[in-house]
Image (cartoon, chains in turn green, orange):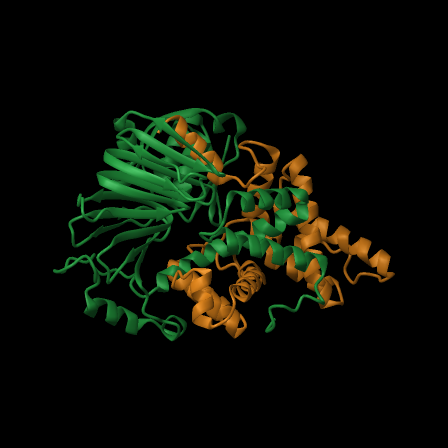
Length: 326
Length: 199
């Protein structure tokens, strides 16, 4: 184990595990491309042994995301609101004392980053007010990094979903980089959601320019209110939606989920983004029936009541899963 | 919401190749949610019934492949019982090959604590417990692997940044991270904090 190049005594299963782990590790990286994804898909679907290895490793890897809670700077202190410059967001004292409290490992490897990192856990929600008056709201299970000690207004959305309300400054555009795309605001409100395979940008107000990495002629697009850009597997498309629908989709900002002709199984998936207890719909017929209305994102009892009243499903708790059956 | 949301949810909830509602996605989900939480039980069963500890991890994966492929045809009713029956059959086969008589090949499955499938009272996995558990898992990693993981998961550094900080190549970082991912899986699945410990 000490020498990472030593692969001699591995069994076939260990080799599969390492390959799966390598995919998991690289898929998190910025350098992951559409052809990497294609290679990964081929490998994943080539054998059940590949698939079970991947699912198993990914499940535990996801649990380690919780470790982000140990990160210095990701504590419960108030969002920054100090004077002067776009740079140093953090009020030193609070950050420092939180840091000193951190036990062992986190402190040992602490280094001064060029970014301030903010993160939410599953079910979390955080509002940041930047010194220029711009606001960023983080949805569940989200990691964002903000460049500091710089005049540049630059944010990286590493994971999850965020809503941006940007103060326009023609001299100094606000940039959001995520999943191989660069969004450059022209004074605006928009939401960005990024997950393993998909990026979704919805524009509520103003204008955003989007540059996509790896497109041959550096193709840029300009999004207008109601535009939804969806990028997945190297393909990018823009859909038009009523602005009202987009605003409804941001009901998470108030802790709610709004459903409109949403299938029960999709509603369950949406819920699962916000809760450690995961809903499983084990009722094939009901799963594809649709619902309309609003539910509190973290209220599993309310979901259970809805499933019982509308579909006659009963719920059973098995550890961290809540299984619904007819 | 509407159509876009549906598209979105379908993509993120399933792995490539597992279209929404297919046997593949159902099997993926069942495997992750009902089989993986029983890994400690499975490992105990294999360890108890096989002499050579170095075979166990491979056998575990063999069992997983079999139960997963069975689930592609039909999701078994009782994950725990199905998992251990599959493990028993595998051991019997291996034993025939190795001309060994398994110690407990016809064990009564009910005695093996398959109750892991049923909810227990103290399940409320507090976030703090989970964190402590994860930290304990980190402690089990070799130092360089641990350092790489801490930089990635706690500090959110990229591979190149980690390479720079640890003064090693990006390739070595990948290698440390991959190995750490494998070891963490053994520790975390082997001792899930949200499942009752077996007696």
